[in-house]
Amino acid sequence: MMRLLQTLYNFIYEKPDYEILTVDEKTYTYSDIQKNIDKWKLVLERCGIKKRYKVVVYIKDIMDFVGIYFALCELDCIMIPIDISTNPDIITNVLSSSNAHAVISSQDLVLNDIKERIPILLEYTCYCTGKRDIDTTDDIMQMLYTSGTTGLPKCVMYSKANMTNNIIVLGETLGLSEKDVIYTPISLMLPAALNTVLMPALLFGTRIFVSRSTIPGKVLSNVISQKVTVFFAVPFYYKLIADSELCTENTWSNVRLCLTSSAYLSEEDFLSFYKKSGHGLHSIYCSSEAGTIAYNDATDIASLRKYVGRPLHGCEVSLINKNREGDGEIVVKGDMISSKYYRNEELNNKVFYDGWIKTGDFGAINETGYLEIKGRLTETINIAGHLVNPLEVEQVIMKNEAVEDAVAFKYHNYADNDMLGVKVVMKQGHSLQERDIIKCCETALPNYKVPKKVIFVSSIDTGRYGKKKRSV
Image (cartoon, rainbow, N blue to C red; front, side):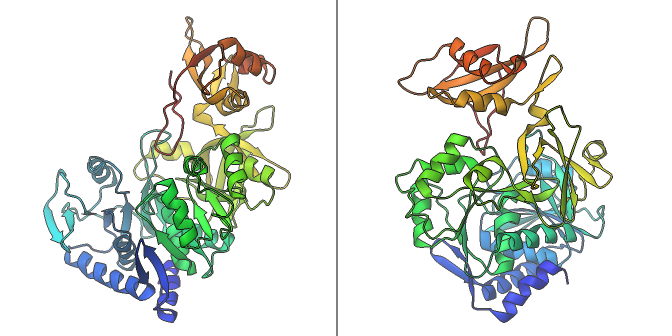
C-alpha cells in the first residue's frame, strides 16, 4: 500500500471518531472519510473505471472530492483534478490533451466523443470516453494542469513517490499536528491548496475548516470562531483582508502561521498586513513542474519580506546563467519534482535536463541558503542587451507616496527595439507628472532601467490571483 494511503488509514484505524473536517456547520470524522472512500470506490468500479485509468474530477463538494481522491488511489488510477471555478468549456480541452478515460462532474457538461453518460449519486455524472489504452507508466498518480499564468495551461505528471514526498515533507516542515486548525479562503481543489493544505492536514491529523464564503469580514470572523492556528491565502487576498476593520492583532492572536504562495506581494501590502495583524507572511515556494521547493521559516520581518525560504528536505536548488550581479535562473532537483509533461517533448526538452527542472524564475541565494525571487525570465525586458526585471522598476516607483500601483511593460519604438514603459495609478488627492516618475527612477536605477514612457491609468488589470498583466 502506498505511503499516503497507509498514513491516512493509520488515523482511520486509531482515531475513527476524530473530527478532521468541518464544512461550515457540518463536521466529518475519519470514519466518515473511510465510508466515503468505500462509497466512491464502489461507484467508480460500477462506472467501469479500471486500474491505471485517467479520471478528470470536476466537482464542488470537498468531502466527495476527498472520497474520490483516495478511492482512485486504492484503484491505482490517475486523478486529474480541475477546480470547479474553471470554465466548463475547458474540460473538453482537458479530455483531449490528457487522453482521459472518464470525467466525474457535478455539472452538466457538453463534451465531444463521449461513449456513455452515467448518472451517479443523484447529483453527479460519469462521462466515459470508451478509451481502453494505457499510456502512462505504473508509477504516475496525478496529472496536474498548470494555472496558465505563464502561458497556456500545460499538463504535468506526478508519481506516487513524488506526490507523497511533496505532501509529507511539507507537513513535517510546517510542524502540522492535531493541535492545529488550518483554514484557507481559496478552493482546496486547486493544486495550490490541494497539496499544500488539504492533503498535509489530512495526513497529520490537523483539523481543516472550510467555508463557502470568501468575504474578508466573514473569513476573519471564522479565524476567530474556529480558533485557527494556520492560515493560508494567496498574496492578493492578504491585501484584501488587511483593509478590513476586523484585521487586528486580536483576530490573529491564536494563529501561529500565516502562509502564502503563488505570486508577488508588494512591500507596502506586506507591511500593512503585518502592522494590523502582528504576523509576517511565511512563503511556500512552489512550481507546477517542481512541486514544493522551499519554505521561509525566518523569524525576522525583513527576511520574511525578502525571501521565499530555504529548500525543503530532499530538494536541491541552484542557479544557472548568472549575470554580473550574481542573479541566475533557478533550477531544482529532488524527491518531489514532477515526472515531466504529458506528451509534450518540446517542453520536456526545454524545461527538464540531467535531473534538474528550470523553473523560469530568476533570483539569488544568500550565504545562509535563503532564496530570493527577483522575477520571471519570460517577463524580463531586453534593453540594449541588458535584461531588466520589471519588478525592480515597479518597486522603486511604488516608494513614491503619491503612487497607488504600478506595472512595467515592454513596447517597441519606431526602429522596433524593445523599450521600457510603465503604467501608474495615482493615489486620490495627489498629482504626478511623467517627469516625476522618471526622476525617481533615475535616482535609484541605472539608465537602461529607467522607463521611457509613463502612462497614468485608473487601475491595472490583474489575473485570477492578483498577478499584474504587463500589456501596453
